[in-house]
Length: 389
Image (cartoon, rainbow, N blue to C red):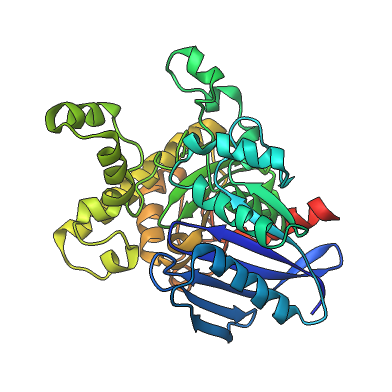
């Protein structure tokens, strides 16, 4: 193996990682995996680029910092004589001032800490591995990539929120998220459908978290997530677009605290809340429960409605790209969405859709429809390489 870059994507109870070989001016996946159950007994799994298992270990009693140390040690051992050159991190929020990848410095860490109120449930988990690595290997270069950066090309009117202007100066804006995914898809689109990449496309990143991005000539001009990752589409456990009056009503009627509302909005809503069963799309698609059917119907209704809204932002629509867990692997959801988009001239190739083909629209469809797997980890690695080259 050649010199390498490690990428980390930290959540509340899991830590996804990938090890990329540096190959010329690019990167190539060598190993990917996850340390899960960090709040209980950490479990470490890894597989190579062919999907073969190369590690499966439990680390009873390991603290978060110990888990980070073990991952670094494992990566170094896996590299053999070659060198781990840098670690790249996904940072959910970049605030108004961070529009490009950056090397970690004491000044950047201070800035990241100051941004925690913008994403209090995400940023502390994103920042924690940076501090752990700085303590364990102070000479190892670290790079931060921001999930909001790709949307910095949106016009001011798409970032503005209609509240008193003084809050805008304080950073209360529509930022958009899933930017690393959209950046990757924009690059792939230029390779597989160059004419569409130069036109008007909407990318549907549909997973447990879900959003849409309107691309004009490969640049973000609008998106469904706004100030927070709660906005826009119905998600696994998040409601998406909600009348703020509902929250005021619940506070007034039930005396719900900010913390109780936060828990409801992030953990008890969306598909899980409507179905009463699960926030996992696979579970709902396999269920005959009427509430599961209601949740699916709402998911697709809102998906189609927001595609219509972004079509207006683009002044028309040439193509739609499905990506992420649901987008890549749920033909039924894509079919339901295509049916609701028939007014745009969408015609689905049922056989291609059933096998998750790259092109799922028919030859005479006015709307091109594609399925393109995303790869946020590769984007992190590429940006990290760019910062150290």
